[in-house]
Image (cartoon, rainbow, N blue to C red):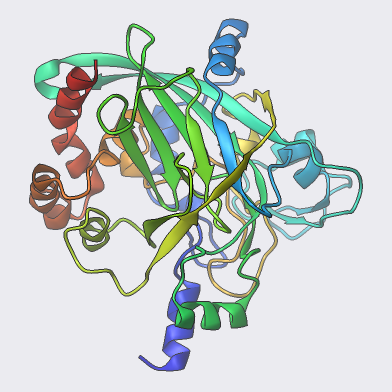
Length: 376
C-alpha cells in the first residue's frame, strides 16, 4: 500500500460511525423507520426512576492527565457557533432551547469554541428504558436498561496505534482532538424483572459489548458498576487496576468480530485501546428527556474538519446500526466471549454468512439466557 493510500485509509478508520462530509450517520437508512416505530419519550426520568439511576450510577476511572468530564450544555454548547442546514448563523450564545429548535435538521452544524473561563461542570446524563425480550426457550423477559452518558470535549484516536498509523494520522490532525465532542460513552446496567443487576453493556467505538454479571464479570460489590476510560479515545471498559490493552476495530464486520473473539487475524486497520486508571471522576447526574437534542440531534455536534471522520457526531442515539438499535438487540449482538467456540460458530452461521449483525443477535439469545441462569 502506498503512503498516500495508507494515509487516506487511516482517515476513514477510527472515529465514531461516519458518513460523507455532506451527510450524517443520522440519515443512514433505517433510522427514520426505527424512531417512527419507537417514538422517543418526551419526559425525563421520574422521581422514582431518578432514585434508581442514582443508586446505580457508574464509577468512572480516568487515566493520568485526562482532561476529564464536562457539562454538555454548560461547557460545550454554550461555547460555540450554530448554523442551520442552509448555513445561516443562529443567535448567540447557543443554549439548549436553540439547539433543540434545529434538532431535526440533518444539515445543522455546531462548532465548539472552547473558552478559558472557570472550571467545567462534569455531568453524566441518566435515562431509563424498558423492553420485553424473547430469549428463546427461556421465554420473554422484561428488562430495564439504566443508561449513563459521560461527556468529553473531544475524542482522540486509540492510544495503541502502530507507529505508521500514528505518523500518518498526525499529518491529518491532532491525535488527542480527532473530532469535537465525545458522548458515545454509554454505560448501561441491565436489570431483570426482580430489579437485580444482571448484565453490563459498554459502548466501544462503533459497537456495544455485553457481559453477564456473576459469569463474565463479578457481581457488583456496591450497586455501582466501575468503568475505566481509555487513554485518548475515551472508550469504556470494565474497571481493572494497572495498564491493560484492548483489541479495537474500526467497525464490527464478521472479519473484525473474529479478531475481537481471538479467532482470526487482525484486520488491516486494527489497534489497541489502553486503560490505566489513575483516579475516579467526580460528577453530577442529570436527566434529559430522550427526545432532547443531546440524544436526537440529526446534524453535526462538532466543527467541520476536512479530513473524513473528523466531523462532530450527531446525537447520542445514533450509536449503532438501525437493525440492532433496539435495546435487546444491542445487548445480544454485544454478547460474545473471546475464544468461545459456540459464539464463533454462531457468528459464522449468521453474521459471516448474511452480513447482518441482527442475525447474530438472535442466535445469541438462548446462550445469553443460559448465562443469566448461571449468574443467579
